[in-house]
Length: 103
Image 1 (spheres, rainbow, N blue to C red):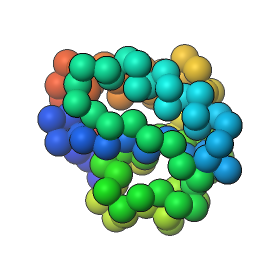
Image 2: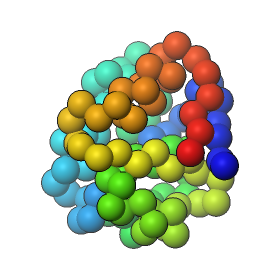
Image 3: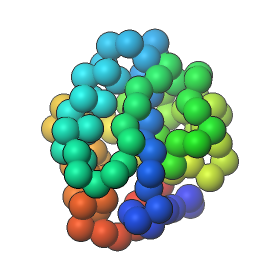
């Protein structure tokens, strides 16, 4: 199980199939919620996840592809719905309050 302490999260990448639709929407939402934390939030196609991503958020249906494309140390956080998913809510709360994010 890969995990990361919240203080070590510098870059979150939100991946979707094409990197242009749903990931843009979720990236905008997450970026606003993490505005004053210093965490960078980007979106990308699932097959093009940058090597410097600390945490990768993607729909559960794309998790296997995301795991294959992400760097070995990146923490993968799969979710079911693009807005209001408990996994995304937990990630944001952990970054703000401190703690460990694990996959």
